[in-house]
Length: 235
Ligand SMILES: Nc1ncnc2c1ncn2[C@@H]1O[C@H](COP(=O)(O)OP(=O)(O)OP(=O)(O)O)[C@@H](O)[C@H]1O
Ligand SMILES: [Mg+2]
Figure (cartoon, rainbow, N blue to C red):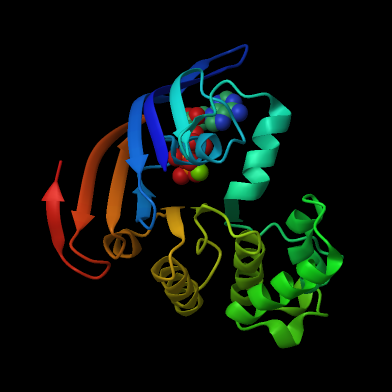
């Protein structure tokens, strides 16, 4: 589903050149729950941004759903991003002036979908995160965990091929974080592929596969027998 081969990403500024990813190769299959860990600055967000077509690699190949997306124009990349990828960020990134219904409507409007279909989808997505009754509220009327649930509903509403999450529990207290993690595990068990960056090794241990990055390279990959099983292999 996602296949990166020898990806390299170099950021050049006037003062320094940073190689954020180097010789980075990774395949993720449909239905996986992969966590990405590693120290600050090791390249985790850079990987997610390339995976999510927000940035292009300096070199290497990226196949998404068997399509080589390395060479596509911006408009084609935006379309794939809208249709196949859902994003969840640490800071939720909801529109403060829009109510929950309208926040979740944002990605669907880009698709030019009929309003009746949008309404059905939005209500189903809000229901799946337990917030349908709050659809007229604006984000500031919700707790942090609830706001992240809205962001998850927005990421899911378009039926993406996979979800990319960058520290989705980083701004939440540990109880609320656990609730969001349980929701992500449910979503994965229902079939959505998830790739999640986390600082929390305990959360990483509960995923099916944990990829550890050091200095832009994969340093370790651990697979579990099942989502809550014990470590089975180290490579
Ligand atoms: N737009 C940019 N311009 C220049 N350098 C950048 C840019 N984006 C990232 N970098 C550099 O690339 C490296 C990897 O950054 P990245 O954001 O991927 O790290 P990270 O693993 O997500 O870190 P954190 O855990 O702190 O979020 C860092 O050295 C960073 O300074
Ligand atoms: Mg980061």
